[in-house]
Image (cartoon, rainbow over all chains, first blue to last red; front, side, top):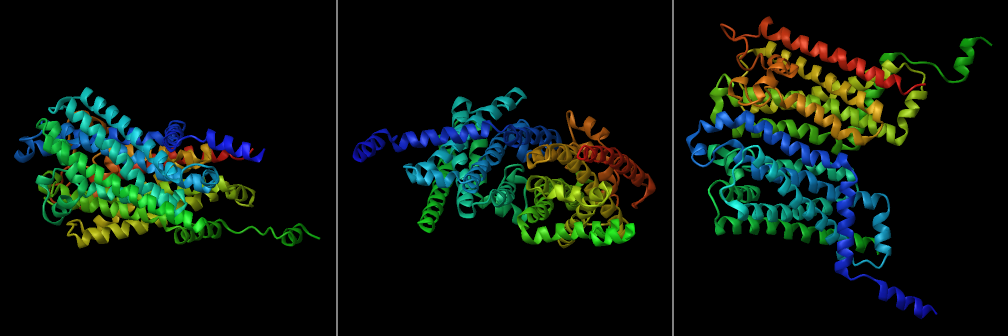
Length: 273
Length: 275
């Protein structure tokens, strides 16, 4: 009798891929069910895009280096707006992971026959889906307001892929923090550090116009590499080289984040055992 | 047994409002020591804004009035840091609601106005710390303050005023919603008020819809007050540089009116808490 029950359990156990899909669906729905969580990741990037375009368009258009490549500051801001949305949204992955630990759901997952990797993959895949949707939404809104994409559909596709990869990457760092600390407040407290990474890149300011140490930091910041490749795709036109750079750097960030969060998960499991 | 004796026996001796406010400030400061993650980012972000904005827009120094971009951005970052201080007090009170601690405040024999005063006093202390740290960083970075001590005084005054404004806005919302989910709404209100003004660039450098909004936003006048000792006034250029009444009164009026309106908003919210 016991053997029959055990056999049934084994037969009904979903494959690791299905487990990951179910957990990623849970991650996406968890965000959709909390509109107050979506507000910052939708509202703030659009608000700052509208604001910065109106505030800095005149100052930057007077600079020949800038005017030679960009029709408006809105074109310049498009990749940064997408990235900003992904940053806001992806932090939620870490917060939700910490919440799962705080409210005991993580322990219930561990007690169930769920693959350990699926717990992580499910959470990060949810971040990738949200990142891709955000990229499409922001691109559509900014195009309606006058942004031009000279690289066409190909450039938009690369933008969406990069957003999904960065959703995994930034979400992965958040998840790592969530697993290590088990505190949603600690994850949210680290959020400004992600902003530091963004502000020390060429996200909001053209690197050609920076001077001194600030320019040096922006030059070596990988976020600048992604954004500048995407900007060239948007404002100059399609280029395999720019597409490869943007995707490769985003993928590297994602791989690093996954490796770090897997390590954090293994450590937590080792301590729990 | 007299009424006084009974009160002593029950251990319900009421402290003065000043002592309660001091205790509330001390509790808040202890909270910073226990959970630095709730304070450190609000200190780092304004410092960071001074450095990044000044570094990025140094090339456009002339657009900011005196050729020194840091003189334009340091007061903005200080105002922003002060608003964070007020905002954080709102969130801290929201956590007290969630943990049930605020119910103990309501049961305590103290006036509701003292409860509000304690939270605002804590916001002022936090704002003062942030203001001084950002100011020191800006001075190290080479900020020009032609207005001297009076210029610094008007900056500190505006920062403290904005801390009160932000705290009243945040507390008014928290008293109504009573949980931390109200955080994004608090942030949206404060960010919009600050950024839809001359926070980033002067009106003469703006284009499109922004100049019209910035002109009617009271925050523009508060920023004029904050920057009075740092850059020449754009709307009312003085014949010689100095901190004059003409640049100060619109900011003082804007602060006074906003505080009065939001105080009513917060007090009405608090009144809903008690039957």
